Length: 275
Image (cartoon, rainbow, N blue to C red; front, side):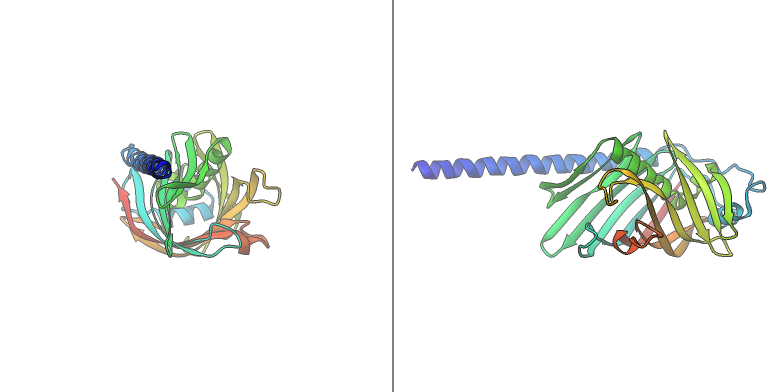
């Protein structure tokens, strides 16, 4: 009889622990949704900037990305359908994500990864100086919980590298010309800044994006500036804005380790610029 009572007690304890874990997961996912809504309700970003004095490559990029009839917008919202490789020697897994991006401001990226019975959900964010990565197995067990100053800096760098998906943010950049097909911009978000290179075609379409992002994917395992970037394969024009729509990104971009550093490939879906 005592063993039966003990077994029932253990089951109740386990059930309670799982219920608490589920509540925490739901709370965090609701928080992420609210952070995204807060970005969506910020004021529209002005499009006022004289492009004539900028380097030719910067003008080419900006005139291609921001059409003559584009209107000021508050944020961009989109879905991503693709695959992710959590470990450099791991398998590529199907991934579906939703993101809100606004600069200045930040981003909220909520994702779900499924493979067989495995289900991993959570996301990445940078909002109002806060950043972090959280993922759960089946909405119950914390698989990834990363916070702290290093994660905040890395998330801010991600937001700046993704400024191409919110073209009004590019107008605030300090632009230089590297060569006839590369534009370089110094972009800022709160206390963080990043120099981003854009390789262009003759029309101003972005072919590659790269910069030095804060991360711990190097040989030392310590946080440091590392090459990060991606290849932009296609683009779309929505409401006067032209943005990359199929891409591959990862660490060690432009180096011999790019093959192991690439970790995310996706197509952009349902892109919506919010006025």
